[in-house]
Length: 413
Ligand SMILES: *Cc1c(COP(=O)(O)O)cnc(C)c1O
Image (tube, rainbow, N blue to C red; front, top):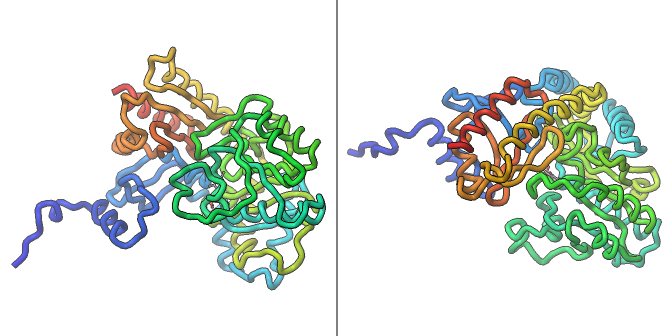
C-alpha cells in the first residue's frame, strides 16, 4: 500500500499545475509561481482565488486591460460571422482594417501578419527587396543596421542579430546582412551606413533591454541620417507603440515619422495575435502575389479586434491616461530613487512604462518579483536586477497607487 508523501499531500492547485506544466512543456520560460485562472481590467485571479495587480500587461499586449468589454464584444460578434478565410479570398473586415490602420499611422499601405516576430521578418524582407528593386543595391549585398541590446523576436534570422547570448547561442548558422551599432550613438550609426545599407531597424525605446530611452535628439538624428543617405528608417513599435508612452507612437516624442512602423502586441487587444508592417505604397509596393504571406495574417477575427483597437486609440483617451498615470508612476519612482541612497539605482521610461534598477543588495530581479508576487503584484524582471513596470493603460489611479505602495514596502523591507 502506498501513502501520499507529506509534500504531495500538501500540494496546492498551484503546485499541481506547475508540476504538470514542467513535466509536459518545453522549459523555454521560467514563469513566476502563479497560475492564472481569470482576469479583468488590471487584475488577475489565480486558481486558488487570490488576486494580483498585473503590472506587466503581457509586455504591453494588454494595454487595454484584461477582458476589455469593447474588445470582447467585437470578438464575440465576429466569432458568429466568419473567423478565417485565408487570403485566397477577400473578406469584409480586411479593407477597413488596412485603411484605418494606415490612417492612424499617417501612411498608405498595410501588410498584416500575426506575431511581432513575423512582422519584423516582413520588415526585413521588405527592406531588402526595396533595396534591390528601388535603391539598386547589388544582389545579395543588402545590409540592415540594428542596435545592440535589441529585442525584435525569436526567429532564426532575428536572433542572428541579437546581442543577447541567451537568445542567440546554439541557434546558428546565423543569417548575415546585419550590422550592430551601440544604441543611442548617432555617430556610430552614421558611420555604419554605407551604399549597401537598405534600412536602420530600431526600437524607439528598448523594452526588453530594460526600457532604455535613447538620448534626446537620437531618433530625430536617425531620421535625418536615413533620409540623407536614402535608407529606410524602420521603427519597431511593437512594445512602445499604441499608447504606452503617452502618444500613439513613441517616435512622436521627437516629432519623427519613420518610413515603416512595425506593430504588434496591443494591436490584437490581448485577444488574438495581430501584427502589421505599415509604410508607403512605394515601399510595400515591392511585393507581388506569391512573394510573401501568412495563412492567418489579416484574418476576419484579427481585423475585427484590430478595428476596435484602432477606434479606441482614435479617442486619445488611452494616450492621455498613459501620460497622466505615467507622471504619477515616475514621480513615485523618482522618490524611491532619491539621492542615490534609496532602493533604486536607476529609473527610466516614458508614459506608463518604466524600467527600474534595484540596488543589488536587495536581491536579484527574480527574487524581488517573487516577493512582489506574494504581496499581490505581478512584475517581471529582465537582465539581472532590472524590473519592468507596464500596467494596463486602463488601470485606475487608486490601483496604481496601491501597487506602488506595495512596491515601496517590498523595496524598503
Ligand atoms: C515582443 C516584441 C517582438 C516580438 O513579438 P512576438 O509577438 O513575441 O513575436 C518584437 N519586437 C519588440 C520590440 C517586442 O517587444
